[in-house]
Image (cartoon, one colour):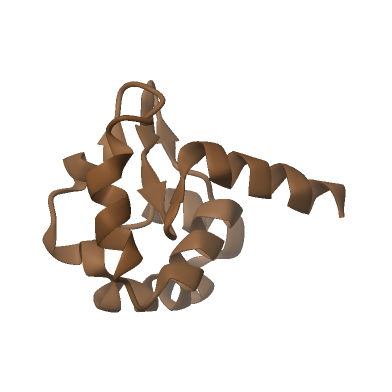
Length: 100
């Protein structure tokens, strides 16, 4: 799942954004259609296959960090799996981070 370029660039600038995207060329999801990782619902049922792909990924930490820093939602669509975590689990992690 390719990170949202505009969102990242708006927060940290182009030079830093290029570093953020560097990990993606090693992501297990890069050869799968993005629709597999996007749902118009909360994504609970849709995330099973996406999480299977994430489970064998070598850049889970980078992906999770990117998604926590730059959460991607587009209208009513949700990223079902990123960094080996469901949307619900990422929201919990994000709330814990904001408390520290």
